[in-house]
Length: 394
Image 1: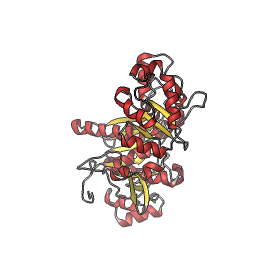
Image 2: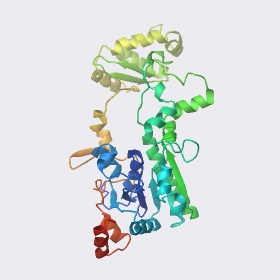
Image 3: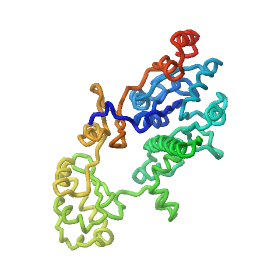
């Protein structure tokens, strides 16, 4: 499907992006992917001035694609006047700066809402807008450390594991919060303040276990569980293959899947040790785990993928990043996209009428300053040149 002339869901929405971190910048990139005009205000409230500030150029490209870039010195009166003019025209202002810096630069919600009363003001924070820890650094590792998930990820006896996945939940929540606020504004005319935090994002990344712990308590959710202690040898259990890879089984209804699994692993389907769900998951659970572990170790991962696919069993080989990077399914659905011979992450949401699209690569710093001054604020070429010569915009 060609999307050259297809409108985006957020066409006509102007977003001012004063973010510095990868995850918060990725949140505004999601808005840009679906049509919002996102203007990066470089150097404002701690926003990075170069790609290196976002870990690598690859991260910078992903977090800032489809955006415009403008650099304005808001510490000078004329620069502040330009910033204020942009705010009066903007629908959304997004920052991830600390409260102290926001207040020092007069970029807080109360100040900016005086310029546009229905402004959506969104902040990516570390630990939320209230409470004694609201001013702690917005670092994903710190948030993940408090979430409770890190100690349960490894096998017993191994150090806690930092997955870095929680910040991706926070990126989506930041974009989702903006969307909810825009919807509310369309209904009521009211602007509001939005906060999405790394702490909450990491907690929702662990929501299955945290919700279970809140409901039931106990220590079973507080410590790692050995793969050999699985309650069901055929569900959520990992087995090593001959070539050092792993197969994961996802067959909670063992009565349904047992005949097929028994056939490919060389086990007698009617073996008296395993001929009922109760025997497989209770009385002879450990024995079945041992038998399956021995069977899977006799063949390569490729063998097991073919065998599992042939019988359409609910299981798969665990892959590394090379798999999605070259997967036809990922490419077909634009989860991975390619432009000018380079692959990048695509779009996680499908919309039939207003799809996401890659309109432009991440901009260089200040690349669109003159364009923004002219098209959004109505400045003449002469005025832009004079402001540029004075170092107010660049």
